[in-house]
Amino acid sequence: MQLIELQTHLNELLDVARFRDYCPNGLQVEGRPEVRRVLCGVTASQALVDLAVAEGADALLVHHGYFWRGEDGRITGLRKRRLAALLRSDISLLAYHLPLDAHAEFGNNAQLGKLLGWRGEGRFGDQELGWIGTPLQPNSAGHIARSLAARLGREPLLVGDPERVVRQVAWCTGGAQGYFEDAIAAGADLYVSGEISEQTVHVARESGVAFIAAGHHATERYGVHALAQYLSDAFGLDARFADLDNPV
Image (cartoon, rainbow, N blue to C red; front, side):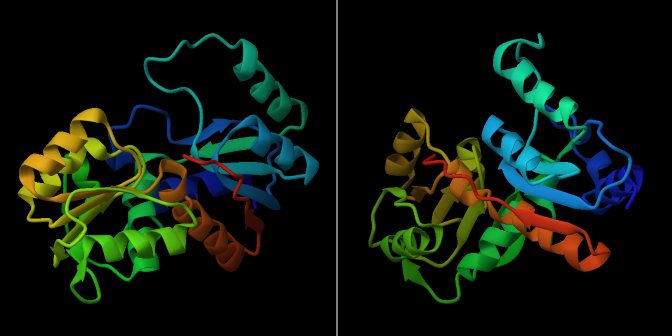
């Protein structure tokens, strides 16, 4: 498959043009024109780049790429090392941030809901990134926290009453704790995200709505994993997902 075809297809599939993001989505580093092998992962860290080189990948597909708004744009230190490794091996880097959070089938939120058995019935928050719906049956916040621990392989942090019955669950993966009050306004009994901030604790205690921080990396593994399977099935590419350990 040609790189330009892969980029065009993914841009259209994930509806990139719809989003106001704080990083470029799509092709970030251009490598060889033909793509046969794609390594997929959450973040384009040096470890993932090195693995792509070792496996002879033609392209690296991630959720967290480079060139974030507001960061120092100079190519020095770790940025130089990452980019140099990609350029030396002629490996392309494609990254999809908010488009991969939001996609109705391959998105992080869609895939996390599928993993937990939550039925997404509505959206909320900026650019409708947050999801809200119902668990398979009403359960306590503590029960849901234990289910997350078992399925994600990481102990989540629950703030609020563990006995609170959850009939409406809201979720948004990654660093989306800022949508907590939007989730409350949407009618959630529990909000699940990846990270937590100091003020999140007070909102949970004062509103009575429980909050679970289940891990940024832990909640955002599933979108790019689903995308790897899609590329393999749809185009016959040698696409695989590598889950590099990250305790966050």
